[in-house]
Length: 281
Length: 132
Image (cartoon, rainbow over all chains, first blue to last red):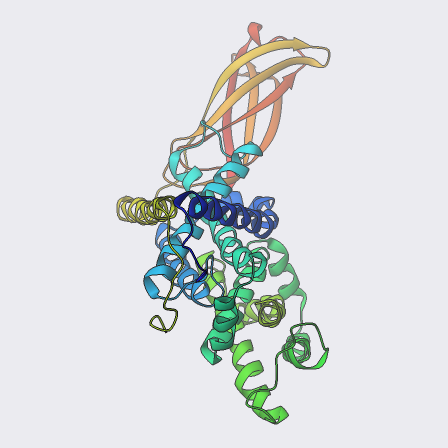
């Protein structure tokens, strides 16, 4: 944007609106699986309010961080990142509210806290989608390129956490996770951990997807990459599962072993989501 | 990093407006949730059914009713039992399960009777529920 003459005010607003349009698109794509899951609507009504508070309080810093590296708009300072995160959250909330009303899932006969609960839950994937859509599908420009190069180790971890949250979020509230983890023997659980780790590593380093991560630092050996990225990423995925399951109140009636098995079960989609997030972003 | 991108993109009023909306939503949501969390009292759900209307259809008499949860917690899989009574004798009964009713919210449902409810005493009540 550092071109000859500065754009007129009208151009600035039009460009912003186009960006909002892209963000709405991303919000719809990311939130539809969650919007059309019944457990999610009832969760909005029944979820403990402190935990929902924790969910929103955790979401905002995540949006700021994502906006820092992929961004709703190309950003250069923290103030811009915070503004972009807020825009993404606004887009997420409004999009969720509109779609929920379109589906007739929120209506006047429902109490205010049920309606707000449903919208807040849906706004998590929706605002993640809003942030990602602009970063990935917006017009590329030089400052984006520069940012992509600056995204270092911690940014990679952030992408992984975001990917894990996104893929987990649509699965975590369903009863099927309970059923699957109840069916699994300890042997199954161990194999699933190993498979998750292998899947993560191969998605990013072996299978030659477009956007495959370069080996960094150059010439780093398998074990170095595996320990620094894959193992840490998997641990992060498990933490994400733990946090989400706790938020959704799924550990409330479970013993430690059952809870861990639940995390490992959900850890598989989380790990795959984390790995693909590194390729996509 | 900020110093390097000398010529930054100009931000329009609209964008600041939407960002302001976002900030208001964040503060609003956090505020309402905190208020709810602080004022929340644990208590059982209380499902109260009121009859909306009765109409005669080809399959019998359709009774539409609204089940409202006046209690402090959300109930799931609520079994509603509708009975037509004459004195102590139950003439006819029908059941319907509601998926969930959030606290202070309501759901509409219906039961169908073979005989006209007008000639008997109609009661509708919740007989069981599960914690969601």
